[in-house]
Image 1 (tube, one colour):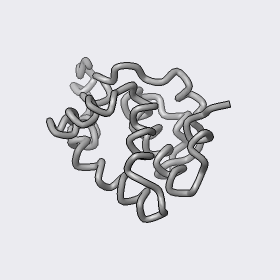
Image 2 (image 1 turned 90 degrees about the horizontal axis):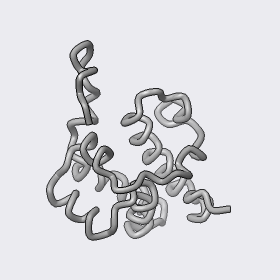
Image 3 (image 1 turned 45 degrees about the vertical axis):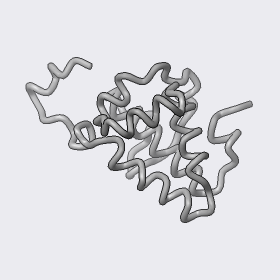
Image 4 (image 1 turned 90 degrees about the vertical axis):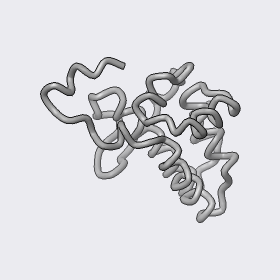
Length: 125
């Protein structure tokens, strides 16, 4: 991903944070509400197109969030159906593409922790 826009402002810290350092928080949030690591992984695979093996490699490599999103094999075309508020911001209103993808993931994990059915989380009709 081209970082030329960084010339005028610093990239958000989350971009340089390793995905592997945030992943356990996603799992803990889900498990605290009776959901599973397998469901967290399914959500991540659905959103990004990573296989389980590729996801495990990204976690092992401690890939930063920006690279994790940029190298996603196939961002799910149904992800634009994800609506709502995360951290006080409407995900559908986020203009910066990388931040929007990160917030999509946050929103899906929130939905999992709130007990929403997987078929609804994964926007299946």
